[in-house]
Image (cartoon, rainbow, N blue to C red; front, side, top):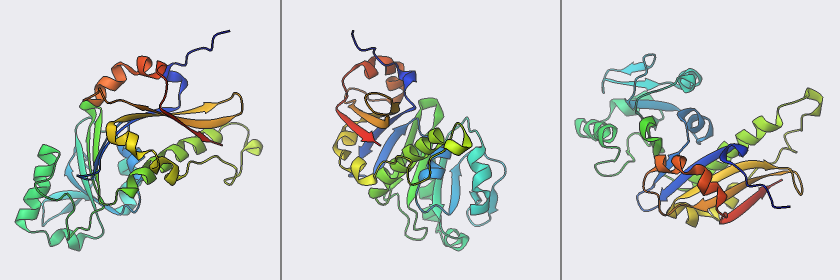
Length: 247
């Protein structure tokens, strides 16, 4: 009997990733700001460069809103229809020291989705610059440390696995040590696929043995992430380039 072809909806999640390691940014698709906030490393305060959020705090020096750590949960739950650009920072005093030129560079990023020079500001010591354009199904993130790319993805997938394992009868829930998890170094070993543009598809496999897996398919012919979702079912029918088993 021929094996039944899987459809896109048979997977837990699909994530498009295209890394530019020279300029330290990654294009994602199907990564929400809530997922970023819960998966990124060492986030404290967020300076809102472009947004439609009405409940943030206000910085008088830059005339920009920001999100304090205690307000992150509420901010993460908000649905945004327009573009969102934010920069992390440690404390407000750093923001108050920004020169007019540095403030202009921040505004340029919010307008052009790219920096004038470096995306990493010495005074802010920012680890990321995050820009989401929901209409284009695109999220662009600059990473000061490229190792944070795979850490973010591992945290994202592992959180999804934990949520999947947490369903059902309370007494049958697995302990934290038993819940499958992907190691960051495993993802890092396949970074060369992400440099070309790749689709990572997470699913739970029941046969031959129950485990989770991530299928990696290179997508070198796609210039725009929204095109990936138009062709998703056809893409899934193609043989994956690599299979990561998580058990």
